[in-house]
Length: 193
Length: 174
Image (cartoon, rainbow over all chains, first blue to last red):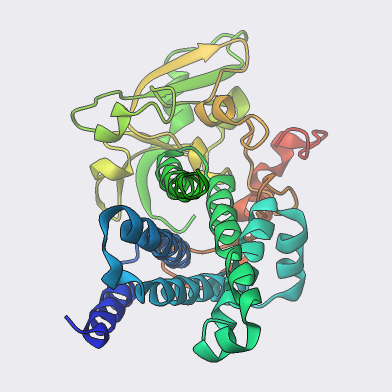
């Protein structure tokens, strides 16, 4: 399969949760609390695409799937897009662009701070995701884009900190992230051995 | 509340049991049935779900035992066959699928208060001025609407119920 075709299919797959959400919105299928459902679903998928992006390199190294490498950026940008919708839903639909309420959330609620920190990192990564940026930043690009690990940790923490009672989904995401980070550390240890 | 419940005043039922002056609180338990309610297979909450009211709150005409809604029998997910509706309190107080009711002298344990005492109090009166530790309670979404609006004290029932709490610090007794 050609690289372009892979990208096209990938983008289509990454759009599916958004299309499903839009379909549910159109058919009153978002339940009793639609804004919360949109916020939750977009946040969940932002995290999942981010974890998928972090799984590409381990898949390449440990399974030999080198064809997937171009998907790292695609998945990262998908994560950023869903995170952007997630943040917009919170600021606009939930808080009605009430600056005082937004400020209060950002300064008094740790889980919002963690989320905003994660988003800020994803934003800088998205803005420097182009090949032109890679050329311009040179070796600093690699250092900057290592921030994706911190963004993922912050996203998982953000999720943990807003849970009311059922920790299971956060535990699953956290475990996957821990495994992906461990795989990288293990690889590094092997390289230097 | 905007939900048209079908029910009877809780007080009318409780009166039949002639509570003595020692009965200062009423406590409720919900059904535990892992077949009908698979969610109970996981100990997310220490089942059975429990709730309670102070006796004067229970006797208030706005405390309702509901058996239906929208003119029909209560669906399972809404707490069939019988549930509590306490419209001036946060929704978790309105316990569903009640199977047991007790009178007690002392304030009973309630599930969410046991799970997170700093977040869920016994009284749980709707109060836009007292934040949950992790988020604000100042805005709400009316069922059927999309956008939010400001929360009202006692969910709009201040005239009817505020007197139950006169003299109480509702920030400490949240």
